[in-house]
Amino acid sequence: MTHHARLNLVMFITIAGLAVFLYFRPQSSDIHKYPLSTSSIEAVQNLRIVRQQQEIALKQLDNHWYLVKPVQARADERKIAEILEILTVSSNQRLPLADLERFGLDQPNVRLYLNNEYFGFGGFAPTTHQQYVATGDQVYLISPRYVLALPSNASDLINPQLLASNEIPVKFELNHLTVELQNENWRVTMQHSDEALDEAIIKYWIQLWQTAHARELILEQALGADFVVKGFINIALQNGQEINLRILQNEFSLVLLRVNGGFGYQFPIDAGQQLVDPHRIKSNQILPEN
Image 1 (cartoon, helix red, strand yellow):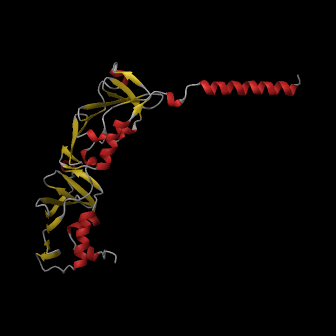
Image 2 (cartoon, rainbow, N blue to C red):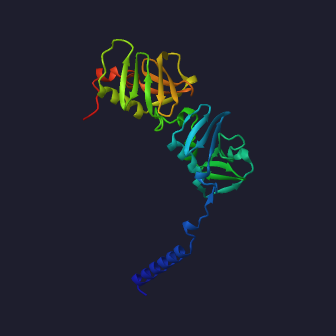
């Protein structure tokens, strides 16, 4: 047998052996996946996050999520959806719920309750950097992105939209003027002889209120001492309810604090001043496009 013939034979045996190995080796699809939960996202009506004895509680009502503790507010539906994704997770590793200290689960960093289902988030595996999570009577390894969806502050879960879609204003009472919807037109009553506001500015100002999103949400107890009260705004809604806002301002930002909610919508100073005074719109020459 020539040298080239021997070489071809060796190559044939090698390729044939590799083919046999690839054919009989376990396929990746055969790796068992362990779901963390059998609950559906749609079934969840109550959600609690407990971190270092601080609790954030939410409830679903009429297909919308609301914070109920430590403040009462509309929740950011997108962020709630990210939290609930844990119900869809499967893990490649499942261990008995034992030796909790080894997994950092004797005192979990964060505890999540979906209805009555518990998830405890512990330490991280040194090789895969996945996180140990306890639920049921098992411990699973999952991506750390799920714990990152759990906020440390309740304000991070508040909906940043200033007025909800069902909060339709029909009257604004400010320190210096009243704007009220009468016969499908907005009527302005000045407290002083201020410069008149034309219809285009008022319509744009109403639109600002209906579309405004806060740059940041802040709890009342977290407001700094540099914030000064500048006035109040009372908004009557189409459904007969009323929203009472306190205006607070420092050098850089303006906060509209929901008096009965205990939290505020924080805006850059220019944007905030346009909301509390439609005259600012005219002076800044910000008008709607034709």
